[in-house]
Image 1 (tube, helix red, strand yellow):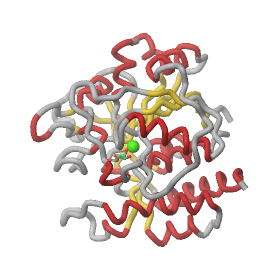
Image 2 (cartoon, protein in one colour):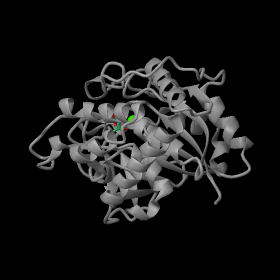
Image 3 (cartoon, rainbow, N blue to C red):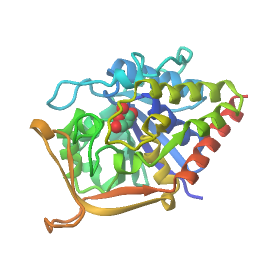
Length: 319
Ligand code: BDR
Ligand code: CA
């Protein structure tokens, strides 16, 4: 099987760590050439530290480069209310053995993409600041990028404002740059990620694996429960389920058959009360060329089973 060469840009973050779990459990299918950290859930200092401590802990051998400190125009807004002050709830990982790369994220991305014989796929699970900076500074990389699989946005609703999802809200200008780049984009927005949930009972199956890693994964994902924002507009069981948003961006590469989506023209609102809203023209009233493949449906049972398998694989590796 040919491996898909990927770069992961991430802001760990609880569900980012779960996304990394899935990616590094599937090294037979994915060739992770580089990990870069973006500012988002927490500051750059913390996302970079967390990426290095989590990936060191699970035994990954990969370069981890530090990304930009701030969104392109806006002041960084973090999500410590959801992910905790450290970004990993109450769970601690040992001091990282993986050191920060001496290449800044944009340089490392540029050189990795240009050096590759095959087109690179970018998985992005935070604000798109680093990816947008790369495309602005080095547009020559575009022809060697296969696609961008991004967790962010929403056709309907939001979780940071009434109409904006967190990653889009934090840096809407970066979304604009990426969406206009002409690179194929797959958007795992809240429309699909809210369907990619794990119930508390299913999370207990993770705990039942019985390893230290499985225990840490369980405590990470259940941390959300105490802090999740409940509104009358969410599903009735909203406080009973754990949303695995970022996992979708990697799962789609591994198991595209689990998902359904539609090619749509998507534009992002940059200012005002709707800043960060991704306006999805799913009826093509605008007549504009689709620029994003927007996912809306997932086979939840298969998704959960595949994720639990990933925790087992990493657990076995660490035993
Ligand atoms: C996104 O926001 C972050 O808090 C999560 O890590 C995920 O990337 C969900 O809206
Ligand atoms: Ca994230």
